[in-house]
Image 1: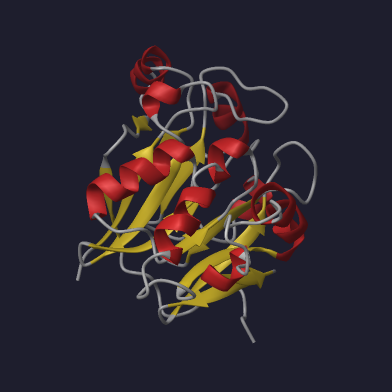
Image 2: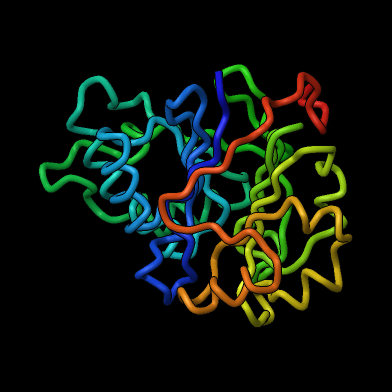
Length: 253
């Protein structure tokens, strides 16, 4: 069965016309794992797949990446087939931030008697996690403060950086032949995000050839990035992936 990475949205926090930056790992044309859950991203997910996600991985807790999680709770809670069965994977260091930003609102239901985590099953991780029989590696990235953002990799298939500055020291573990690298990149970088000049300074040409760029600031920025020879993801675009390898990049035991 085929593997694909589908982009629900590709925009930076202010580029709402491009949708919240988020993607879905598809296996056999079925959604396997949603990566980030911004408000526009959840809307795009429901429009494409018709039902709420059964599994979400969070890279970090900025609102353009978590603002759909309240709606996800309600959509899942009132479906007996989903209540308590949907999973949220995130690095253990993010748990206090997720709790404070999403789950700690007093009275998640007006009627009371329900906790956010009664409906959404929290699965904290550190090095990575198992999902549907596959090991996913989690690695730290450079976005705002240390320890607040984490990328995701499926060995032999793809890497998704989330919001970050360049992290060649992390990506080197995963860039085996044929791996797709989905990387944060705008036309101009800043202390929390990568710019195209940063890519060309920090990464070897053979990595850049396998990049798909997202989290840029406008349609015009996307055209400029494409004009410099990069693949640039568009909202609703999918990219084929190699099937994942059988050996995890880090030992899960």
